[in-house]
Length: 119
Image (tube, rainbow, N blue to C red; front, side, top):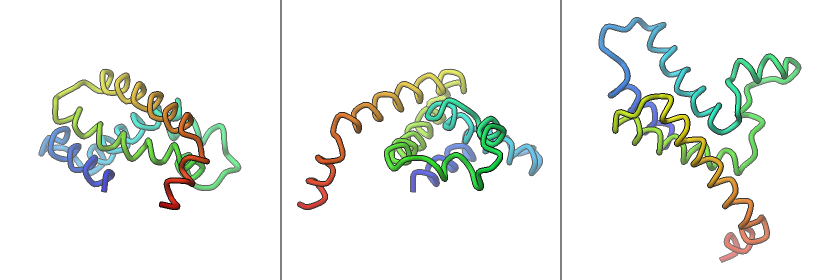
């Protein structure tokens, strides 16, 4: 759901009507890499270059906590896009969000998560 919210925000706010299909795909890829850099510290291309023996992409190797934060980042980025924030400003804000949320999840700990699941 958050992925759809994110791509809709890109479509509605970042894509001029006169772009080619290639330019449109590059805009979506650029926004995906914005999230990758904010969360993982590298672009998809950088990850592939360092992990040539791995199949798939870096998100396939993300932890559950990272995937949870990524979903939250997609939603937050859609808000920032609609607010007209520049990509550079969004990168900083998204990175701050990722750091805060990963730290909060880590502080909760897996034992607490298991307790919540039993309720």
